[in-house]
Image (cartoon, rainbow, N blue to C red):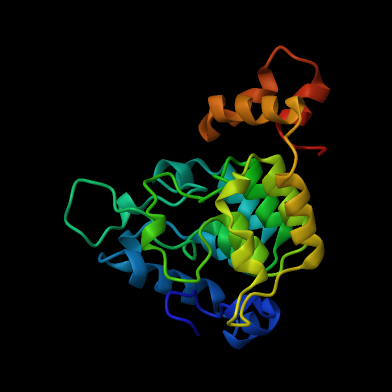
Length: 247
């Protein structure tokens, strides 16, 4: 397993089911311990809540839905986006910048091809580029590692449906270096040809005004107020469109 990869992670986007089976059925516990080792010096029970990561890891959609609606989960700082301030090893008042995507729920759900969990996290307001609500240090990312969620989705050979979702939710398509994907010499990058084609076509044309308006409205509201879309004085089809319920 590559350094910095979560337990059971498939190198180069291999078969996630096989890797998950290798974890002996204790994916949730192992993942939480790994997250603690990476980002928390406190006892396990005092670390940032990782139940969202666990659910994304095993593709547990019902648990993911319950967590996103659970007040106690939100009250203790748990978020669909990573926040390193809660788990920094450095004794500092400043936020520690994100230097890897492997701790992000979106990355985890994509790496294990859990499309419905991936979609639900985006609907809940997860940042489609970095899945982080703190500072980002792309220069600090390991060489050859994905530099954004779209890059990770492509590198892990995810289906085109993942690409469509990130496009719809406003991902910055210019963050991905296509040439690095097409001319990878390590053999670890297994890009889905259809997904790559969808990405290239999307980057070659401007988003529609309708799509841009939806992205803007959701960003202005912020993830903590997306539930207010239900009470907006607009027709139900527009509410459904803003909530990505029928897209």
